[in-house]
Length: 536
Image (cartoon, rainbow, N blue to C red; front, side, top):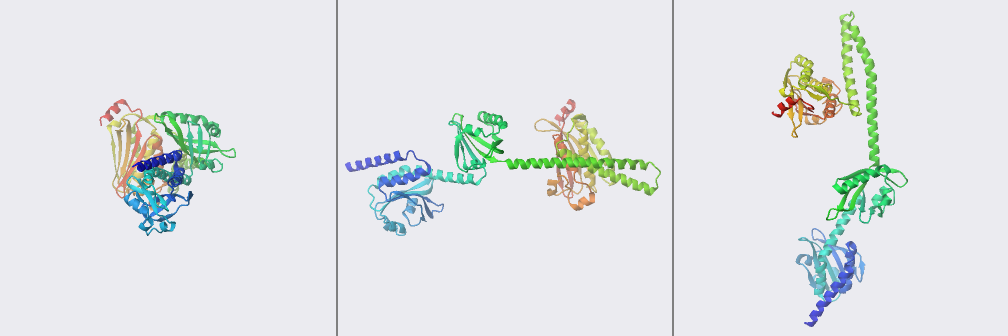
């Protein structure tokens, strides 16, 4: 009895000593120190941590202490080994004769192992590995060894999984182009990953420095903006996503995108700021060049449109004067052809000029008073005649609620409706065209005017609907040759509607026609009309 008590006391002392020596270690250092210290404390000839694969077929050692020193790792088939028995049945001890009990494990015989003590490592109900101590002699204190293994099994599992998670995160960080920034607000030290240092033009190694030394690299025009964004993030939790200029090696400044989030204490106080730095300098330069190129193109189109329109107006003016003179029938026919061709060319030039102004950002819409109902009736007139010439019926439906004044740009609304009606007549050979002008109310209580132009024409495939509002897009080549046009009308109409805080949508079925809906806000609509619309 006395010997048993002394054995328990020796085991407790051994565990306390081991715990004291391991208390300051974490991560891979803890795992390596554990196998070395356990081998020393227990007099084991070999101690190792093994990681089993998902199929429980292979065991791969993570840390091995052999003959009093850390040795290389190895991998071996799990079947027929004491580790397989441990994973299957739980902690086991073979005080002597383990090599004879597992003849398929030739390593035991080769190494002269007689005793074995091991326990499985679990993540939930799934075994992930084994920690084992091997002896070339009979084990003297098997219970004490199992006590140590049992005590540390959870810590070992947690450290192994943490190391693996860290390795995966490290691989992910090395595989991406971002640099990692970790600012400890309590110590005012900023950690920069190797990739982050590389982005700044320095050798690719981890670096820690006071925040003041890094703040000196910021462009002075960005400092106040950064401080305001940091204060807003710390106080209100607003997202921190900034484009900033940082001085790189060589003295030049480059644009970076900095995204970060504060790590807070339990009482909500920020303690760290962890984020990523992305080099966007080349992207911004490319975007600026593309913007300048687009502006140059728009300016060129606008200039050329003006230059061509001036002599074209001269041609139309002279042909109009010529029409008022005495002409022979054949001569009058030729002059009429000149006029019709000139007007068609002038329409194309006007479309190109409008598109150029819109894309250059120099196009402005007005906010004048207009009557949606009267505007609709006035636009329909010319197209009703064209529809009758093709044998088409045209129906007009105007909501009584729209018989009032609203604020908008009537000239541009007229242009949108003219484009939609022109297309409806152009692409409809039989049936009817229907025009509707309605007042509706949105879910948030705002009022809007809806113009709808529907036809029973050729319709559109879904693929064409996706690009119908793109400039210079007009169905298929056969349809383009038959109906003509530049494909700018709908693109301009879409952009005009958006400039007026509205939108255009289209629904279409091939062979069954199309419905174009224009939604525009009704600003400053008469109060009596608003009350009427609210009761609908």
